[in-house]
Amino acid sequence: MFVGPSCSTPPLVTLITVHHDTLLVPPDVLARYGALLAPEELNLARRYRFPRDRRRFIVRRARLRERLGAVINARPERLIFTTNDHGKPAVIGGPHFSHSHSGDEWLLAIGEVECGIDIEAIDAAVEWLALTRTFFAPEEIAALTALSEADGMIAFFRVWAAKEAYVKAIGLGLSHPLTAFAISTDLPAAITRGGDGLALTTPLALPGHATALVARADHITVRLASRAP
Image (cartoon, rainbow, N blue to C red; front, side, top):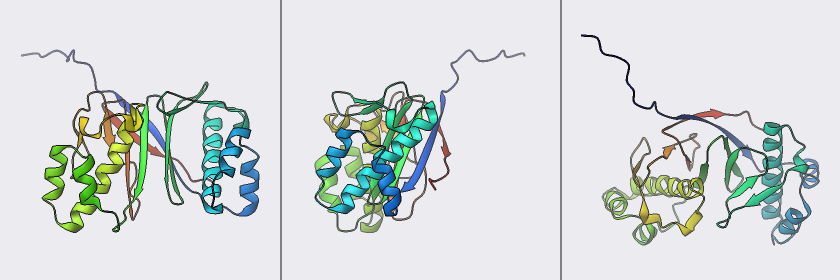
């Protein structure tokens, strides 16, 4: 018996380019990066009390301009950024993007659909169990508290990174209740509730860190870009 082709809609597979760079740069590069920033960005940089934090801000803003400028063939210093009511940034005339940093590690995701990326340093000093019981969904609490201390801590940071990436992708930030959706505590990462139209993946394995990428798609294909020189 002949069976015709399926009429169901094929899954939406979305390519997201992910950049991973360090925010540690020599003084001459930092000076060059400062020249790429808009006056309001430089004013924000000056508000940082510690030079380390000021450096990280300047480098990630300049790298963001460089990477997006390369995509749309525009000079980095001429890019114009906007934000929505919840602080999600966008670049006029450019693709969707999201970026995140932890210490000197920086991630940037660029794609043709809304996306969110997050990186979290796994820190044993964090009271992860208290945070779990305060902010996480009931099924996440049950799953995490059933794990050993060591496994629970690592799983907590994976879930936390995924939740941050999720609220960035939908453009609502932490105004969206973290209990309105749920993330699996095991691997591969998945949105187990409240994730219609969204896909979750781990963009790269980085020792000592948890990373997550969420996009409006059925499936995400990640292309890792080369690091900045």
